[in-house]
Image (cartoon, rainbow, N blue to C red; front, side):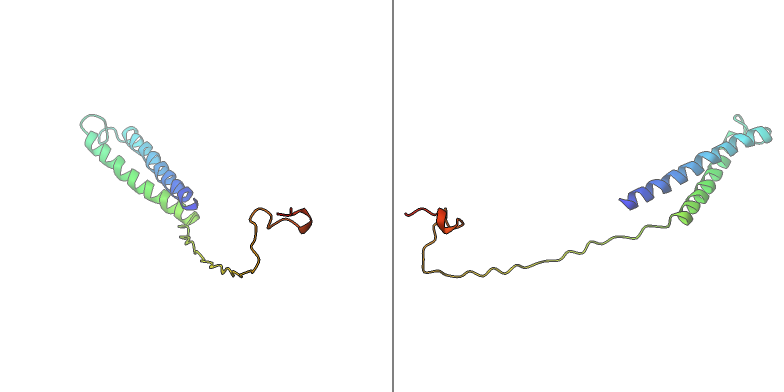
Length: 109
C-alpha cells in the first residue's frame, strides 16, 4: 500500500510539472509573438511547450524523489509450524457423547 501512495505522489508531481510548463508556452506567445504564435509559428510554439513540459515534469519528479525516495520492497516471510499429536490407546471404550462430561453427570448406560 505504501508503494501505491508513493507512485500516486510521483505521478501527481510529474503532471503538475507538465501543466506548469504549459503556462510557459502561453508566456512565449505574449513575449515574442513574431516567433511563437498560433498561426505560422504554431509548430515551433508547440515543440517549445513540449520541451518545457518534459523538463519541468522531470524536475518536479526529481524533487519528489528527493523528498520521498523509493519505498523499500517488503517481503513476507512465512513460517511453517508442524504440530505433533500423540494418540494413546485406552482399554475402556469411550462414549463420544459423554466423554467430556464430569463423572456425576454421566448416565448409566
